[in-house]
Length: 343
Image 1 (cartoon, rainbow, N blue to C red):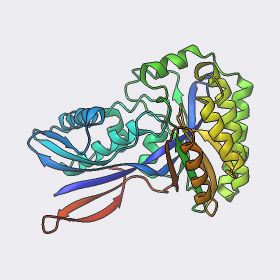
Image 2 (image 1 turned 180 degrees about the vertical axis):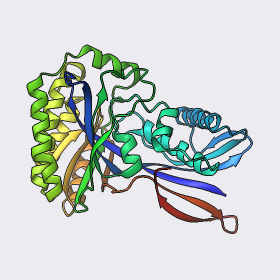
Image 3 (image 1 turned 135 degrees about the vertical axis):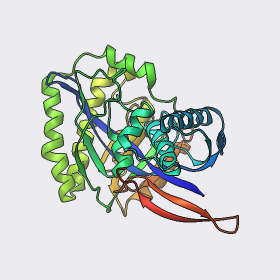
């Protein structure tokens, strides 16, 4: 008997308030994406064992498993088979999805009742500048978080999670073409923290412009399934936020190649374009019928520039899926799939 779990990745589509004068800072918007995934199976065992991966991912999963087992008061161990992993530090939320997948699966396996938020805090995914990753693990779709309270410093925040202030299904008729460029990983950890420390507060007028685009163009367009209006607002927000970050990423986007790829997708029919977090993942949102063509065009574009990964993906309107596995004849499994629920 084991537990199977599969998570989406996430795209971070921009931050809202990098000023903080109203008592909250950051805030963000983003979506779940069906590919790539974290997918793994956990079993009971006498000690912690991780198979299917090597190197840093294996070490990370071992560390996570140990932390959760101690928290749950489990004296035994676990055998974890990693079937898929999201590339690390490319802007797709790999760390949050991996941590929550391991924690949720172990909670099911050892019959512990915990919330997704509790799992995030145990694995140190709380105290974050963004609540998007935790939200899409739980519910999928398009989400907006309300930022971090100024009396909870991001570094060492003791597990504070930004609240989700808006969530909405993403239209089934829309697709995302996501390209992970052949570049060095985006900023993370101490380097990311230092980048934020170096930047001055965003001008209040700029914050107001982002909020107006979000509330009066992007969200109504989402509700009415108006992709051109949604995409235009997304692109404008990305340009504004990118300009603010340009002193630490040497441009509106993370590299000249990122700028070129984003412009290429816009020229080839993407209605909205942007960079997820610090990159190097970039994306375009496009109509369903246009998506396969754009996917092939982007793949050819990257092939001429050192390669890279391209995903044509939908936005799932539910979060991670999981199920109990029962062996059948020793070489297969009977799997009952359930959406993540608050536990």
